[in-house]
Image (cartoon, rainbow, N blue to C red; front, side, top):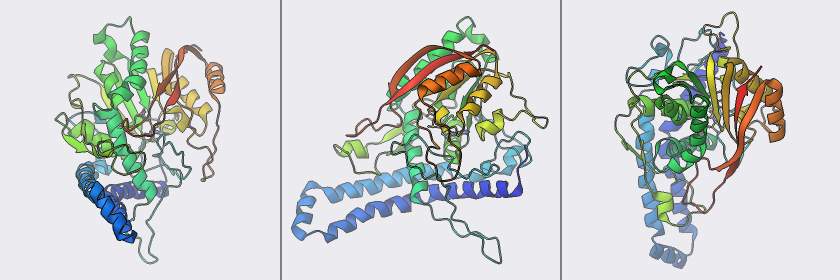
Length: 426
Ligand SMILES: C[S@@+](CC[C@H](N)C(=O)[O-])C[C@H]1O[C@@H](n2cnc3c(N)ncnc32)[C@H](O)[C@@H]1O
């Protein structure tokens, strides 16, 4: 599928804005912390003195330091953004790790995106499972063309952009830290177990002949774990925040616990003590480049529906019937039209192929302000739909789990997620 020049330009602007968000993190976050300092001056002297005895100002200083540590890490993610440029279309494979099979030129017929290209997504790509469930899906674009030249203004990241970036830091904890293990054990382990159960008659050395797809792969840990089990595994993701971040993790990180982040320094609410807010998290907990030789692991950047749902005459790589398993974790509720998502999953699976799902139904497009359609089924309806589309559901249960949770905060959310194994029967 080729994309119009306008779509390509919009995507490039979006990519540039994401880079600007990373680069502005320190300035933005320090300013937010400084607001607390300034507020102190409005207080009566004696109140300030009492707060001094609690070490409140020292805490603000410690937060500044933690922000700078985060900034150092985030700057490494975007140190080389040109690797996501057009040139990569010629050589999508990076010899140091996972192949980012993702960055073709703009006329690529697969509908994959260069970060910075394609689809006119007017909604926000990067909505995670935020607990506040904000509906601000408008992609912010601070660029504006001057009347006489097309030179864009410097982009000023919005609160919304920064929120995405802060979520990305927490996503690193979920996927690539020892601290995230508990969350991963609850969500990823049952999925891996179900996959192994489905292929229990396949000897481990032969798993490489079975192709597993993980749409909405986030920072890639589940897909990486599956490749580690020996399957041929492909992750798919369209958020630039996720793609840039997983590139650093998967292709450029050669040491366990190489990076330090302080993911929880941005909010002072529901914090029981300093450690809960200021503690450092080391990443990664495993060596991402340490997949066994011969592993088949790739990440494809782009919209799931465009890449896997548009087998047509101009499609370079047919998808129908090509996958032995699809694993969706906190993903199906990103659909505008769940019927289409399930139909694509069904179509791309080989006969007898398996779809393993775990996740809530936090419909990302519910009440969107971008005029996107949104179909919001309840769980019973989703399961009925699965059956009508041609799946047999088994191994069904509910699994309580968190999503990018600060385990030491005074507030936490637990999703009572729906889990199932669905086999393609018709
Ligand atoms: C809630 S997150 C879950 C990430 C990961 N599966 C996990 O469990 O940590 C949903 C992910 O799906 C991605 N996503 C949403 N819609 C997508 C689409 N149409 N194509 C590709 N990725 C998509 C988002 O960017 C986000 O990273």
